[in-house]
Amino acid sequence: MSKISIYDEYESVIGVEVHVELNTASKIFCGCSTVFGGDPNTDCCPVCMGLPGTLPVLNDSVVEYAIKAGLATNCDINLYSQMDRKNYFYPDLPKAYQISQNSDPIAVNGHLDVLIDGVVKKIGITRIHMEEDAGKLIHDDTKGTLIDYNRCGVPLIEIVTEPDMRSAEEVKTFLQKLRAIVVYLGITTGKMNEGAFRCDVNLSVRKKGVQTLGTRTEMKNLNSFAFVTKAIEVEMKRQIDVLENGGSIIQETRRWDPAKKASYAMRSKEDAHDYRYFPDPDLMPVILEQEELEQIKDEMPMLPEDYMNILMEKFGLKSTLAEQIIANKSVADFAIETIGKVANTELFGNLITNAVIDDTSIEINASQMIELIDLLDSGKINSGIAKKVFEAMRGTDEMPIQIIDSKDLWPITSVEVLKQIASKVLETNPKIVEDFKAGKTKAKSAYLGLMMKETSGKADPNISDEIFNELINKM
Image (cartoon, rainbow, N blue to C red; front, side, top):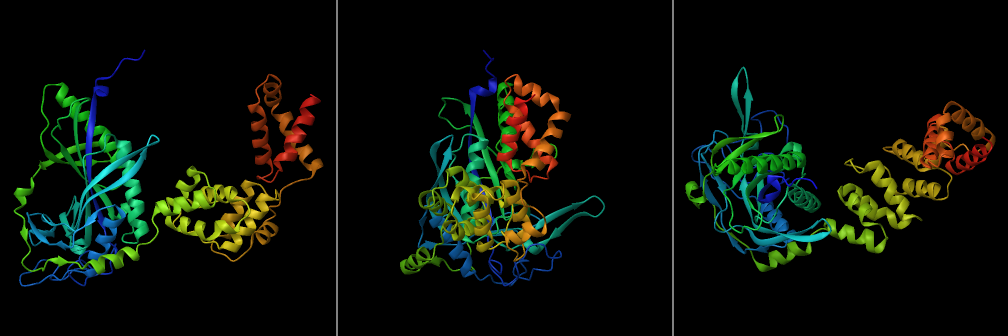
């Protein structure tokens, strides 16, 4: 029996604050562009620079996008909300306060259901509020710290959860589902490498069975699922080590260093009263009419679960395939448009997930896909050839048969040709014969793999299998 680790006696209590950059054409309070990647300090004006005498004007689209996020996460939408000033001095926020929402946010009391180890778990969403992003500090060894104010005023929504998660895996699952939702809504690019979807992790630990919450720390601006997972695992262990050695946890903000896989204290954690919130005197409250809210509800697009239900219930796809397809909206849109026109939906699901699941666009049309699945379903080509054809079709109007003809990709079905190749494979790899005769059936898989290698994937697997049985009986 393995020894129980001291770490097994603890559990983590985790909530997250997710920052979603909205993909509106202009910033939240001015007309500057929100396009990512411009030259430093070229997309800013007196308003987003916080110069004296400037007045902000709230972007209507930001309100609409925030409402959509609230509806998609089962929140109550407040018909009255207001913008507040959150006062603090950071060098990347030139006016020394951030316009955000405190006491009256746009959305409250929501939740997302996530599947954890086969069990549905409800993760509470405390609030969603609108706010402006800060600028970006660039640390240069020779020039010191530089400031790019382009990001100042880029619209954000912050989605704050309850401390309902207990592991890095739960947090990752929640974040992946949330990111898919906001991307499907069309309110953000969701590009984590550009900071369009990032989160702060609030984490504390306690002995299992204890109900009292421990002192939490906050890790800021984690912008990949891998960073989130590792940061949680490391911080949980760090806190347990501190407690087990007789120390106490300090409520503080920490910075995660992905290169060193460690977090470092930045500052003691402020509470809400430290920010001296008060209503922004330059902005009127946001007052919605019920009719406006109903119109936004009517305009809500299909969300990931809607796609999932269609793929499974209408077209009979397995949940594993459907989940992979909906991970990418462009793939999901193509699937919904095309899957009903193919003869074999399972072949469609397998091919599309293997070929394009990591890409942002499909680059083939429905007619090309239909013909390709028909060729695969009829046995005229195998899955390896199908994938090669798929890649060759992307960005072209060529049909599968044209590509197979021009690239000589038709399967080798000649028994004589395949028998010659098989004989050579078995002669040069006698261990395959030896292992198979010793009852190791996996040896046949090794043989088929070599047959595919020798023929660039064109050997007909069924004929190759029959030839193997024939040759092995003569040896």
